[in-house]
Length: 256
Ligand code: SF4
Image 1 (cartoon, rainbow, N blue to C red):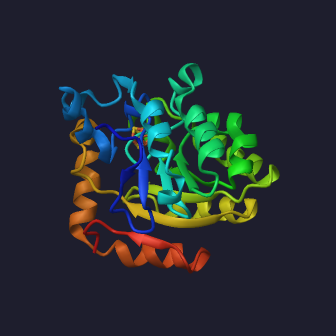
Image 2 (image 1 turned 180 degrees about the vertical axis):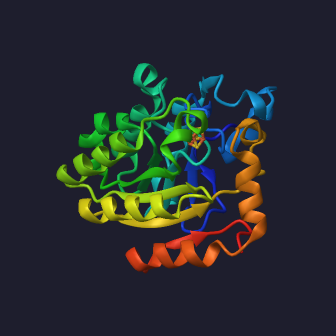
Image 3 (image 1 turned 135 degrees about the vertical axis):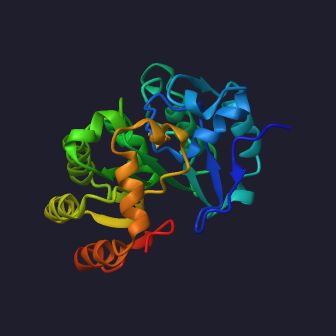
């Protein structure tokens, strides 16, 4: 039987819900691109299709008929797709998921991770759910941004989203993902801005160059790989991160 809440192996996350297969943002580094195979596509096609899960809402209602199974559990919405990607503005699947949880299992702890300003649409629901909202921010040079993230909102928009979520009474966190290898100065600037806004950086993930074949098509790819392989980068990035956010959890993917 198909389910909406899928048990998770992510530390601290009991279940995940992914309302879509695919993601219209099509980030070239996306680690979920392997999911394309689940619908007969190639990872190289990641970003060219988004399929709403037609069974999702009925499956969620069915699972939440026994809400005591989920009491106090943490569900992350959007572990393999962005829950607020372009199609969500029309389809509203993520919003329906939030409404159903609020009605049937308000004690489920809801977390969301997104790159999109569309999350602001659902602030009233997110406040009622006391949702744990994360905004993903990549750290890379402006010159590469549109090549690497062809359709997602730029850094300035995401910083503004963080400000607005805070003003709305939520306490959003930041997931710096990914951090590119030639960006130590950019990282310092971004961290300074996040400090000014007053948000926590909970996780920081250093670029893993081989998890998405689309990265290989980018002009800077050989340089990024060379820099990572030369080594010696990790200590500097780690120190910079920890100087601003001593509690940050760093995912390093073999950087030395
Ligand atoms: S927004 Fe997230 S899920 Fe979508 S392509 Fe980018 S990294 Fe992948």
